[in-house]
Image 1 (cartoon, rainbow, N blue to C red):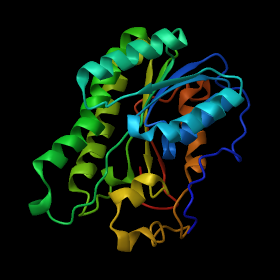
Image 2 (image 1 turned 90 degrees about the vertical axis):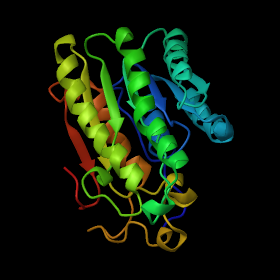
Image 3 (image 1 turned 60 degrees about the horizontal axis):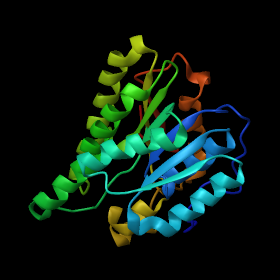
Image 4 (image 1 turned 180 degrees about the horizontal axis):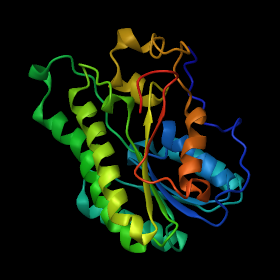
Length: 265
């Protein structure tokens, strides 16, 4: 298994489908968020990324890659578990980008725990704050700035449909994201704002090797898929581009699966 995630720095080439669009991506410093940020820039979008302050070095690399495409790259570090920060995050993104057309709620917390007896209230709360509350706060703050044609994309997971026993808290949040997406899509359809979700299967991102999977399972991660390997972030980036673009103008309330042949919608 390739231990280095391919975020698309070298392999993704755009065609201008997002020219002039402005995007905010949470968790844009690494993994799937990073791949989406690079792809958006190569498709012509200006991009603001949010990330935890301790991930600054990773974020700097992403910002350089966005700038290299001749696009605006906005750095907005901070902890999205705080409601006031989420509101300020959106305000700052709108101010720096001059508006907002695309919102990607991608940041997530995943920490494997084998037994509910060992799952602390602190971790349970942190997982829900990161994966659910932040999505709610950020989306609520963003909607007044979104115009017809705008797109909201939420990152769910195969865990919403095929939950692992050691990801009890994480899997619940990913199921909730599906329901949030489908309900909100119905609310916003008349405003011309589309809301969709992506449900990745096993993708090789830093989330897995930093406690998202037990150490004994990391080296076999993704082997159970029909393709026999985990996906790379760059392989998922085109799905985010499609949902952000007018090419998917009739798609809303949908969940797009990409899991190498595993259990997705």
